[in-house]
Length: 224
Image 1: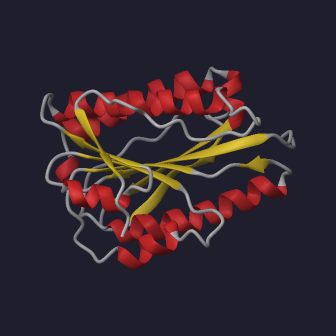
Image 2: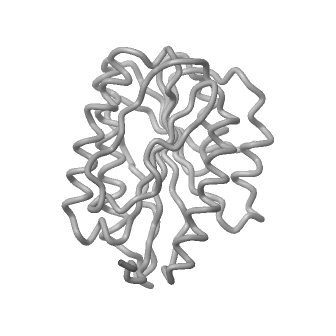
């Protein structure tokens, strides 16, 4: 059955699956994914106008859930903590995935708005990720996404600011990692809902950026 052409805003959740995420952090994300699925998938207005993709990265990166209409999938796969922390692999996969996804959406006749990326990490990268990141966020690439970067654990504020193109968020220590990550997930859900249900005056879909996320300090983006 062919999908009816419409306006679409793609969301990509890019999650650190390195070994340091094991235990409470990865469990908090996995516990939140069914809620995200239920809230977005059961909202026909938002589900029609947004698509969701889950990417996990550690020493390598993989697409755990291809870009999907959440009303049409039965569940979202969980994360599995292992390996190191390689940002470059995540950015390379994200570039290739966005390219393929947007081409497919446009081929179906949809109007596609700038992709939104929620990037989550708990540690400093162990690789040289600069070239992969610059290719992903190069303004001359018409599909360059809006990136929000969230971090906790040992990741540095400066690293998050370099990853973000819109805003960065660093855990402030006021709550444990599991509680902070539940707040992160709640902010992602709310952003998708708001972005899909509140188009601009011109009718365009645009990323609705979380203003205040409990447990996190908002920082300005500082891409280099």
